[in-house]
Image (cartoon, rainbow, N blue to C red; front, side, top):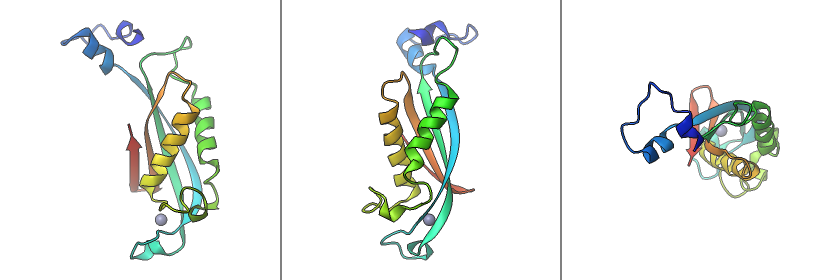
Length: 146
Ligand SMILES: [Zn+2]
C-alpha cells in the first residue's frame, strides 16, 4: 500500500488505516485545446446556429502511489493520450462526428466522451482518469468525473 508509506509524518491518521489509505492520492492535470464547430439541435437561441469554439480541455488523473521515477505518469504520455482522444474532434464540424451526429456536442457530452476515450486508452496504467473539464469559453466549463 504505497500511499500509506508516503503519508506525511505531520499528517496523523485519526481513523483506521483503511480510511487513511483512501485519502492520500496524487492528481495530475494537463491542459490542451482544440477548435471545432457545432450547433445544438433542439436549442432555442443563438447556439442552434452553426458556430465555433476554441475548446479547452483539462484532464486530471489520480493514483495512490508513484512509479520508480516519482511520477504518477509522465506528463508527456498523458498529453499525448489526450491529444489522441481529441484528434477526431479537432477542426471538425462536431455534428458530423459520432456520437455527436446523434447527441448534442455540449461541453458536458464532450467531457464524458473524452473521459471514456482516455479511460480506455489508459486502462492498463495504474492511474484513473478522475476528471475531464471542457471549457467552451474563458468563463464557462462543464466537467465529467467518476
Ligand atoms: Zn457552442
